[in-house]
Length: 301
Ligand SMILES: Nc1ncnc2c1ncn2[C@@H]1O[C@H](COP(=O)(O)OP(=O)(O)OP(=O)(O)O)[C@@H](O)[C@H]1O
Ligand SMILES: [Mg+2]
Image 1 (cartoon, rainbow, N blue to C red):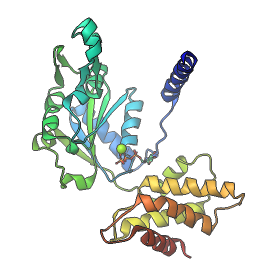
Image 2 (cartoon, helix red, strand yellow):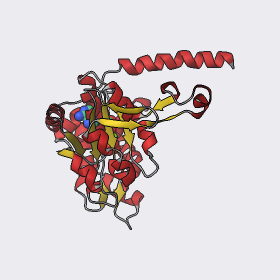
Image 3 (cartoon, rainbow, N blue to C red):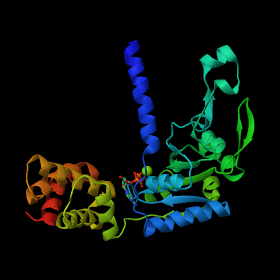
Image 4 (cartoon, rainbow, N blue to C red):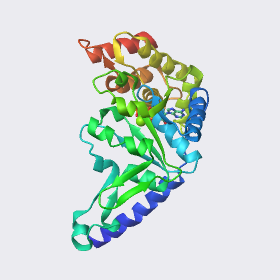
Protein backbone atom coordinates (compact mmCIF):
# COMPACT_ATOMS: atom_id res chain seq x y z
CA UNK A 1 0.00 0.00 0.00
CA UNK A 2 2.81 2.36 1.00
CA UNK A 3 4.70 1.52 -2.16
CA UNK A 4 1.61 1.97 -4.29
CA UNK A 5 1.05 5.42 -2.81
CA UNK A 6 4.67 6.49 -3.31
CA UNK A 7 4.51 5.31 -6.90
CA UNK A 8 1.27 7.18 -7.49
CA UNK A 9 2.79 10.36 -6.02
CA UNK A 10 5.83 10.13 -8.26
CA UNK A 11 3.71 9.53 -11.34
CA UNK A 12 1.37 12.34 -10.38
CA UNK A 13 4.26 14.82 -10.14
CA UNK A 14 5.45 13.67 -13.53
CA UNK A 15 1.98 14.18 -15.01
CA UNK A 16 1.78 17.67 -13.50
CA UNK A 17 5.07 18.55 -15.16
CA UNK A 18 3.85 17.06 -18.45
CA UNK A 19 0.74 19.26 -18.37
CA UNK A 20 2.89 22.35 -17.71
CA UNK A 21 5.22 21.54 -20.59
CA UNK A 22 2.47 20.88 -23.11
CA UNK A 23 2.21 23.60 -25.72
CA UNK A 24 -1.18 24.33 -27.15
CA UNK A 25 -1.55 23.57 -30.82
CA UNK A 26 -3.95 25.84 -32.61
CA UNK A 27 -4.52 26.97 -36.16
CA UNK A 28 -4.69 30.67 -35.45
CA UNK A 29 -6.04 32.18 -38.64
CA UNK A 30 -9.24 33.71 -40.00
CA UNK A 31 -12.06 33.53 -37.44
CA UNK A 32 -9.62 32.26 -34.80
CA UNK A 33 -7.11 35.08 -35.14
CA UNK A 34 -9.95 37.61 -35.37
CA UNK A 35 -11.51 36.21 -32.19
CA UNK A 36 -8.12 36.18 -30.48
CA UNK A 37 -7.60 39.88 -31.28
CA UNK A 38 -11.08 40.83 -30.08
CA UNK A 39 -10.47 38.94 -26.83
CA UNK A 40 -7.38 41.08 -26.28
CA UNK A 41 -9.31 44.25 -27.17
CA UNK A 42 -12.07 43.31 -24.73
CA UNK A 43 -9.57 42.72 -21.98
CA UNK A 44 -7.81 46.03 -22.61
CA UNK A 45 -11.11 47.88 -22.78
CA UNK A 46 -12.39 46.13 -19.66
CA UNK A 47 -15.33 44.50 -21.41
CA UNK A 48 -16.52 40.95 -20.79
CA UNK A 49 -16.87 38.86 -23.96
CA UNK A 50 -19.04 35.88 -24.76
CA UNK A 51 -17.97 33.35 -27.40
CA UNK A 52 -20.89 31.76 -29.25
CA UNK A 53 -20.40 28.73 -31.46
CA UNK A 54 -21.71 25.24 -32.12
CA UNK A 55 -20.08 22.33 -30.22
CA UNK A 56 -16.50 21.58 -31.18
CA UNK A 57 -15.72 24.80 -33.03
CA UNK A 58 -12.71 25.55 -30.84
CA UNK A 59 -14.12 27.80 -28.12
CA UNK A 60 -12.26 26.09 -25.29
CA UNK A 61 -9.08 25.76 -27.32
CA UNK A 62 -9.15 29.45 -28.20
CA UNK A 63 -9.43 30.39 -24.53
CA UNK A 64 -6.62 28.02 -23.63
CA UNK A 65 -4.44 29.55 -26.32
CA UNK A 66 -5.32 33.06 -25.15
CA UNK A 67 -4.46 32.24 -21.55
CA UNK A 68 -1.21 30.57 -22.58
CA UNK A 69 -0.09 33.38 -24.89
CA UNK A 70 -0.68 35.91 -22.15
CA UNK A 71 1.13 33.75 -19.58
CA UNK A 72 -1.85 32.89 -17.40
CA UNK A 73 -3.77 29.87 -16.26
CA UNK A 74 -7.25 29.07 -17.51
CA UNK A 75 -9.86 28.20 -14.89
CA UNK A 76 -13.02 26.61 -16.02
CA UNK A 77 -16.60 25.85 -14.94
CA UNK A 78 -19.38 24.22 -16.92
CA UNK A 79 -22.84 25.29 -15.87
CA UNK A 80 -25.71 23.05 -14.84
CA UNK A 81 -28.52 23.20 -12.30
CA UNK A 82 -26.40 21.38 -9.71
CA UNK A 83 -23.70 24.06 -9.53
CA UNK A 84 -23.85 26.12 -6.31
CA UNK A 85 -22.04 29.39 -5.63
CA UNK A 86 -19.65 27.43 -3.40
CA UNK A 87 -18.56 25.38 -6.43
CA UNK A 88 -17.40 28.64 -7.99
CA UNK A 89 -16.02 30.37 -4.94
CA UNK A 90 -14.90 27.47 -2.78
CA UNK A 91 -15.82 26.11 0.62
CA UNK A 92 -14.40 25.32 4.02
CA UNK A 93 -13.16 21.81 4.57
CA UNK A 94 -15.08 20.74 7.71
CA UNK A 95 -12.37 18.42 9.02
CA UNK A 96 -9.71 21.14 8.87
CA UNK A 97 -12.14 23.67 10.34
CA UNK A 98 -12.60 21.30 13.27
CA UNK A 99 -8.89 21.51 14.12
CA UNK A 100 -7.92 24.96 12.93
CA UNK A 101 -11.13 26.97 12.81
CA UNK A 102 -12.47 29.10 9.96
CA UNK A 103 -9.21 30.41 8.56
CA UNK A 104 -7.75 30.57 5.09
CA UNK A 105 -5.89 27.27 5.62
CA UNK A 106 -9.25 25.51 5.99
CA UNK A 107 -10.64 27.03 2.80
CA UNK A 108 -10.58 25.18 -0.49
CA UNK A 109 -10.92 27.78 -3.24
CA UNK A 110 -13.04 27.15 -6.34
CA UNK A 111 -12.11 28.13 -9.90
CA UNK A 112 -13.69 31.58 -9.82
CA UNK A 113 -11.88 32.62 -6.65
CA UNK A 114 -8.61 31.10 -7.86
CA UNK A 115 -8.76 33.04 -11.10
CA UNK A 116 -9.62 36.25 -9.23
CA UNK A 117 -6.76 35.82 -6.75
CA UNK A 118 -4.14 34.48 -9.16
CA UNK A 119 -5.17 36.69 -12.06
CA UNK A 120 -6.29 34.03 -14.53
CA UNK A 121 -8.68 33.65 -17.42
CA UNK A 122 -12.02 32.38 -16.15
CA UNK A 123 -14.04 30.41 -18.71
CA UNK A 124 -17.70 30.07 -17.91
CA UNK A 125 -19.00 27.33 -20.17
CA UNK A 126 -22.78 27.23 -20.68
CA UNK A 127 -23.36 29.86 -18.00
CA UNK A 128 -26.99 29.89 -19.14
CA UNK A 129 -27.47 26.47 -17.56
CA UNK A 130 -26.68 27.80 -14.11
CA UNK A 131 -29.66 28.57 -11.89
CA UNK A 132 -30.62 32.22 -11.81
CA UNK A 133 -29.40 32.39 -8.22
CA UNK A 134 -25.92 31.26 -9.22
CA UNK A 135 -25.89 33.50 -12.29
CA UNK A 136 -26.66 36.42 -10.02
CA UNK A 137 -23.76 35.52 -7.75
CA UNK A 138 -21.51 36.28 -10.72
CA UNK A 139 -22.67 39.85 -11.15
CA UNK A 140 -20.33 41.34 -8.55
CA UNK A 141 -17.23 39.43 -9.65
CA UNK A 142 -17.89 40.28 -13.31
CA UNK A 143 -18.92 43.91 -12.92
CA UNK A 144 -17.07 45.11 -9.82
CA UNK A 145 -14.22 42.60 -10.01
CA UNK A 146 -14.73 41.84 -6.35
CA UNK A 147 -16.22 39.01 -4.34
CA UNK A 148 -17.25 38.34 -0.78
CA UNK A 149 -16.00 35.11 0.68
CA UNK A 150 -17.94 34.02 3.73
CA UNK A 151 -15.97 34.48 6.96
CA UNK A 152 -12.84 35.57 5.06
CA UNK A 153 -13.89 38.94 3.72
CA UNK A 154 -14.21 40.81 0.49
CA UNK A 155 -11.41 40.66 -2.05
CA UNK A 156 -10.62 42.70 -5.13
CA UNK A 157 -9.58 40.68 -8.20
CA UNK A 158 -6.01 40.72 -9.39
CA UNK A 159 -5.34 42.69 -12.58
CA UNK A 160 -5.13 39.56 -14.78
CA UNK A 161 -8.60 38.22 -13.90
CA UNK A 162 -10.48 37.95 -17.19
CA UNK A 163 -13.92 36.31 -17.30
CA UNK A 164 -15.17 34.94 -20.63
CA UNK A 165 -18.46 33.19 -21.32
CA UNK A 166 -18.81 30.45 -23.92
CA UNK A 167 -22.09 29.15 -25.26
CA UNK A 168 -23.79 27.16 -28.01
CA UNK A 169 -25.93 29.28 -30.35
CA UNK A 170 -29.23 27.44 -29.82
CA UNK A 171 -28.84 28.04 -26.11
CA UNK A 172 -29.23 31.74 -26.75
CA UNK A 173 -32.94 31.27 -27.30
CA UNK A 174 -33.55 27.81 -25.86
CA UNK A 175 -34.96 26.56 -22.59
CA UNK A 176 -31.94 27.77 -20.65
CA UNK A 177 -31.75 31.49 -21.09
CA UNK A 178 -29.00 33.64 -19.74
CA UNK A 179 -30.49 35.79 -17.02
CA UNK A 180 -31.10 39.35 -18.16
CA UNK A 181 -28.79 40.66 -15.48
CA UNK A 182 -25.87 38.45 -16.48
CA UNK A 183 -26.49 38.93 -20.20
CA UNK A 184 -26.29 42.64 -19.63
CA UNK A 185 -22.76 42.23 -18.25
CA UNK A 186 -21.54 40.41 -21.35
CA UNK A 187 -20.72 43.33 -23.56
CA UNK A 188 -19.22 41.79 -26.68
CA UNK A 189 -20.35 38.70 -28.59
CA UNK A 190 -17.81 36.78 -30.61
CA UNK A 191 -19.18 34.24 -33.07
CA UNK A 192 -17.30 31.11 -34.08
CA UNK A 193 -18.71 28.99 -36.88
CA UNK A 194 -17.37 26.05 -38.84
CA UNK A 195 -14.10 27.16 -40.39
CA UNK A 196 -13.47 27.44 -44.11
CA UNK A 197 -12.52 24.23 -45.86
CA UNK A 198 -8.75 24.75 -46.04
CA UNK A 199 -8.63 25.83 -42.41
CA UNK A 200 -10.64 22.84 -41.23
CA UNK A 201 -8.35 20.51 -43.20
CA UNK A 202 -5.36 22.18 -41.56
CA UNK A 203 -6.97 21.65 -38.15
CA UNK A 204 -7.56 17.96 -38.90
CA UNK A 205 -3.91 17.56 -39.95
CA UNK A 206 -2.64 19.38 -36.88
CA UNK A 207 -4.62 16.99 -34.71
CA UNK A 208 -3.31 13.89 -36.50
CA UNK A 209 0.44 14.62 -36.62
CA UNK A 210 1.51 10.98 -36.37
CA UNK A 211 -0.39 10.01 -39.50
CA UNK A 212 0.33 10.97 -43.04
CA UNK A 213 -3.16 11.54 -44.35
CA UNK A 214 -3.37 12.17 -48.08
CA UNK A 215 -5.07 15.23 -49.48
CA UNK A 216 -7.51 12.97 -51.32
CA UNK A 217 -8.62 11.35 -48.06
CA UNK A 218 -8.88 14.71 -46.33
CA UNK A 219 -11.06 15.99 -49.16
CA UNK A 220 -13.42 13.04 -48.75
CA UNK A 221 -13.63 13.50 -44.99
CA UNK A 222 -14.41 17.16 -45.45
CA UNK A 223 -17.07 16.36 -48.05
CA UNK A 224 -18.77 14.02 -45.62
CA UNK A 225 -18.53 16.30 -42.61
CA UNK A 226 -19.79 19.34 -44.50
CA UNK A 227 -22.68 17.33 -45.95
CA UNK A 228 -23.96 16.74 -42.42
CA UNK A 229 -23.95 20.51 -41.86
CA UNK A 230 -26.15 21.11 -44.88
CA UNK A 231 -28.65 18.32 -44.25
CA UNK A 232 -32.06 19.43 -43.00
CA UNK A 233 -32.53 15.99 -41.40
CA UNK A 234 -29.72 16.65 -38.94
CA UNK A 235 -30.11 18.78 -35.83
CA UNK A 236 -26.55 18.42 -34.57
CA UNK A 237 -24.10 17.94 -37.46
CA UNK A 238 -20.54 16.67 -37.42
CA UNK A 239 -18.19 18.94 -35.49
CA UNK A 240 -14.49 19.49 -36.12
CA UNK A 241 -13.99 16.75 -33.55
CA UNK A 242 -15.85 14.24 -35.75
CA UNK A 243 -13.64 15.05 -38.74
CA UNK A 244 -10.51 14.60 -36.63
CA UNK A 245 -11.83 11.28 -35.31
CA UNK A 246 -12.62 9.93 -38.78
CA UNK A 247 -9.17 10.92 -40.00
CA UNK A 248 -7.38 9.32 -37.06
CA UNK A 249 -9.45 6.14 -36.96
CA UNK A 250 -9.21 5.50 -40.70
CA UNK A 251 -5.44 6.11 -40.62
CA UNK A 252 -4.99 3.73 -37.71
CA UNK A 253 -7.18 1.06 -39.32
CA UNK A 254 -5.12 1.36 -42.50
CA UNK A 255 -1.93 0.86 -40.49
CA UNK A 256 -3.33 -2.21 -38.76
CA UNK A 257 -4.44 -3.75 -42.03
CA UNK A 258 -0.96 -3.01 -43.47
CA UNK A 259 -2.54 -1.21 -46.40
CA UNK A 260 -0.72 1.57 -48.19
CA UNK A 261 -3.58 4.01 -48.57
CA UNK A 262 -6.87 4.58 -46.84
CA UNK A 263 -9.27 2.52 -48.94
CA UNK A 264 -12.88 3.35 -49.65
CA UNK A 265 -14.01 0.49 -47.41
CA UNK A 266 -11.85 1.62 -44.49
CA UNK A 267 -12.97 5.22 -44.75
CA UNK A 268 -16.64 4.22 -44.89
CA UNK A 269 -16.24 1.95 -41.90
CA UNK A 270 -14.36 4.52 -39.82
CA UNK A 271 -16.88 7.23 -40.73
CA UNK A 272 -19.77 5.06 -39.62
CA UNK A 273 -18.11 4.25 -36.30
CA UNK A 274 -17.71 7.96 -35.61
CA UNK A 275 -20.93 9.38 -37.01
CA UNK A 276 -23.45 7.05 -35.33
CA UNK A 277 -22.64 8.84 -32.08
CA UNK A 278 -21.65 12.25 -33.39
CA UNK A 279 -24.84 13.24 -35.17
CA UNK A 280 -28.31 14.00 -33.90
CA UNK A 281 -31.06 13.48 -36.43
CA UNK A 282 -34.49 15.04 -36.37
CA UNK A 283 -36.96 13.10 -34.22
CA UNK A 284 -38.42 10.12 -36.06
CA UNK A 285 -35.28 9.44 -38.10
CA UNK A 286 -33.50 6.19 -37.33
CA UNK A 287 -29.82 6.94 -36.75
CA UNK A 288 -28.07 3.88 -38.13
CA UNK A 289 -29.73 3.60 -41.54
CA UNK A 290 -29.52 7.38 -41.89
CA UNK A 291 -25.77 7.35 -41.21
CA UNK A 292 -25.24 4.48 -43.62
CA UNK A 293 -27.15 6.30 -46.33
CA UNK A 294 -25.25 9.51 -45.68
CA UNK A 295 -21.87 7.79 -45.83
CA UNK A 296 -22.82 5.96 -49.01
CA UNK A 297 -24.09 9.12 -50.65
CA UNK A 298 -21.06 11.18 -49.72
CA UNK A 299 -18.26 8.64 -50.20
CA UNK A 300 -19.92 6.56 -52.90
CA UNK A 301 -20.69 2.87 -52.58
N1 LIG B 1 -8.29 26.50 -34.56
C1 LIG B 1 -8.03 25.23 -34.19
N2 LIG B 1 -6.78 24.75 -34.26
C2 LIG B 1 -6.50 23.47 -33.90
N3 LIG B 1 -7.42 22.62 -33.41
C3 LIG B 1 -8.69 23.05 -33.30
C4 LIG B 1 -9.05 24.38 -33.69
N4 LIG B 1 -10.38 24.53 -33.46
C5 LIG B 1 -10.82 23.36 -32.96
N5 LIG B 1 -9.81 22.47 -32.86
C6 LIG B 1 -9.91 21.08 -32.36
O1 LIG B 1 -11.27 20.72 -32.40
C7 LIG B 1 -11.67 20.06 -31.19
C8 LIG B 1 -12.78 20.81 -30.50
O2 LIG B 1 -12.31 22.04 -29.95
P1 LIG B 1 -12.88 22.63 -28.57
O3 LIG B 1 -12.94 21.57 -27.55
O4 LIG B 1 -12.08 23.83 -28.26
O5 LIG B 1 -14.35 23.05 -29.02
P2 LIG B 1 -15.52 23.76 -28.16
O6 LIG B 1 -16.08 24.80 -29.06
O7 LIG B 1 -15.02 24.18 -26.83
O8 LIG B 1 -16.56 22.57 -28.02
P3 LIG B 1 -17.77 22.40 -26.93
O9 LIG B 1 -18.85 23.35 -27.35
O10 LIG B 1 -18.20 20.98 -27.14
O11 LIG B 1 -17.20 22.68 -25.58
C9 LIG B 1 -10.41 19.91 -30.35
O12 LIG B 1 -9.84 18.66 -30.61
C10 LIG B 1 -9.50 21.00 -30.88
O13 LIG B 1 -8.16 20.65 -30.73
MG1 LIG C 1 -15.58 23.56 -24.88
